[in-house]
Image (cartoon, rainbow, N blue to C red; front, side, top):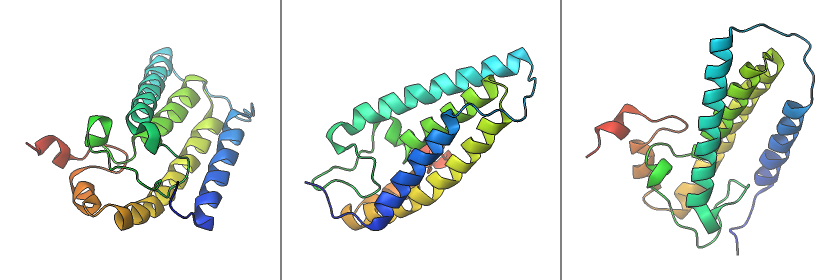
Length: 158
């Protein structure tokens, strides 16, 4: 059973799917020629992103949902990759799309990755409103971890 979803839940997911579709569409209007070292460094970033996504999905387990509204009966995960960032799946996808786009010498894919980052910013803001209403300790968790990337506070915690 899930918490009641708002129209925003569906809008965010539909927009996300459309952006993913645009990303995979092979349109390279402008091609660049990044140095080989940069391309392979970017590929490494993309691979790290995919490992973050896999790890976060495995940690969420039954709590996983494409919608920003948390499932009914879900638990707030604060360990593993969630100890460092509040939205590691978004983080991993951002790293994957940027990394792979630069690896392919595709400014088009980098622009789409920026659009995806902006979408994830707004989607995560909405998601955090929903999480605060379900988890009383979410605000405390939020002060200790970064949204997409670790904050200095994360590493200074004992």
